[in-house]
Length: 305
Ligand SMILES: Nc1nc2c(ncn2[C@@H]2O[C@H](COP(=O)(O)OP(=O)(O)OP(=O)(O)O)[C@@H](O)[C@H]2O)c(=O)[nH]1
Ligand SMILES: [Mg+2]
Image 1 (cartoon, rainbow, N blue to C red):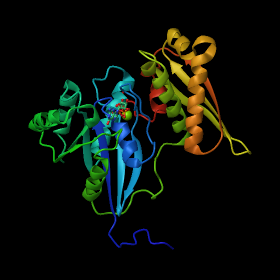
Image 2 (cartoon, protein in one colour):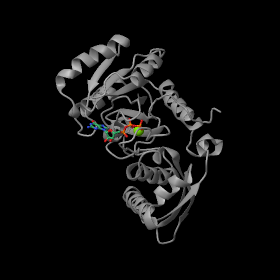
Image 3 (cartoon, rainbow, N blue to C red):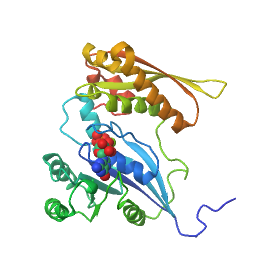
Image 4 (cartoon, helix red, strand yellow):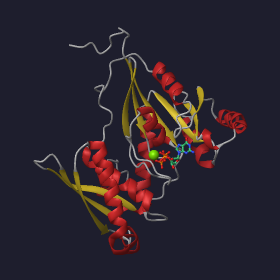
């Protein structure tokens, strides 16, 4: 049998929550640290709707990285469940990272999150992201401004898309993990079940290919997953939208948009799962789905009423 820690270094393990305002680059950073795509990314805010775990090995340390939904002022029942999932992630963590879009700086949304973090027992770390899109001399005033609100234990500057600063951040996180046994098998990169992965991959394409109100008024559920003897799988997903107009946009001229969403999502899934996928999408109009318990629970979220 092979020894999992040939260096004899005692194992360490910890949970790290990645928090911040919508669109700060949390999921991009999680994927960059994990070295693989575990969570969907889009240019639109409120992309991530649930907590998604990525297990990252760094020497004798296992880092259980938790991507969370962006924290914002919730209006819908769905929003409330998303924001609660994000704060829940912070509570369970050994270390919380606050990701801030350095270009946007200290917005009201960031101030509110800092207010929430101030109640936590452990001082979080500040991670200024998108450093590729700013001039470096704006960073020091921003760091001072943020730390005046709450003294962060450490401050890091990264570009999640380019990777600048990420290896050093990863090393520092690993060094901070408390001694203890690993919580997950080493090769257990993510916790997303295949059905959820399929739904999320379709949703990512909706976020990328449609605009205005459509992405935030759409949800995707995998209705059935059938493994075929030839190694392929037939996957049927339902997309719920709030209104007839949104359904029309999603389907597009002669079905062109939904076809493109399906074909890109299928290609992505085939790459991730390394098998052939036959993906079938069915669009349903369902007004008020974002207030429905069953739809919220289907996202793996806890309904708060
Ligand atoms: N220029 C630049 N863009 C970035 C960087 N990191 C992320 N982005 C972009 O920011 C947008 C949002 O990225 P996400 O990773 O989805 O952001 P998020 O914080 O997970 O967003 P939510 O899930 O909606 O809360 C995408 O268009 C990313 O490509 C970065 O380091 N530099
Ligand atoms: Mg995200």
